[in-house]
Length: 288
Image (cartoon, rainbow, N blue to C red):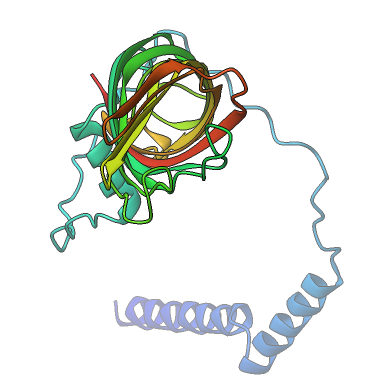
C-alpha cells in the first residue's frame, strides 16, 4: 500500500515535469516575437501595391416612367425693409399729363383768334403816299376734313393807320376784309408747320382827318401765308395752341370814294398800281 502510493506520486511528478517542459517549448520568447514581427513587416512592404483599373463606372438605370417628383414651392420671404416710394421724374410727369389730357383728333373744327401788325408796302393809288402800319385783328372758323387739309373763312380788320391822303394828322386809317383760306398742314390741324393760300373778298382801306374822308376798295386780293403751330409736350396734339403766322396780300384798288370838304368823288381808278400788304400775327388756335 505504501509502495503503491509512492509510485503514484512519482508518476504524477514525472507528468508535471513533462507538461511544464512542453509548455516552455511551445511559448516563444520576447526576442522571438520581435523577430517574427520584423519579418512580417518586411514581407508586407515587399508585396506589390494593389492598382485600380481605369474602367468606367456602370451607368445608373433610367428612372421609371411611373416615378414623379412633386415640386415644392416656398413662400417668398418678406423684405427686411419696406420698399421706397417710386420717384416721379420729368418724363413720367409728362406721360401722366398726356394721359390726363388726351390728344385731340387730327381732324375736325378749328377756331382762330389773332392779333398782330398789318403794313402796306406801297401806295394804293397814283399820287398818294403809302399808308402806315396798323394794329390788325382777325377771327377764322373752319374745319380740317383730313389731317393735312383744311378750309377757313373769317374776318380781318385793322386800325391806327397813318395816311398822307388826308394830311399829316390823319391817323384814323382802317382796313376790312373777308378772307377765305385753304391750309395745308405738315402734320395735322393742331401742330407743326403749315402753308395757306386764299382770296380776300371786299378789301377796303379807308380813313379820315382834316375834313378829308377816303375809301379805297379792292374787290379781290390774292393771299399767301405760312405759319407754325406749337405742339404739346413730346409732340402731342393739344386742343389749344399758338400760331405764329405770316401773310401777304397782293391786289389792285379799282374803286375810290373821296370827300374833301363839299367836293365828293365816287368812281373807278383806271391807272391804279398793284400793291402788297404784309401781316404778322400771333393766333390762338382752338381744335374743337
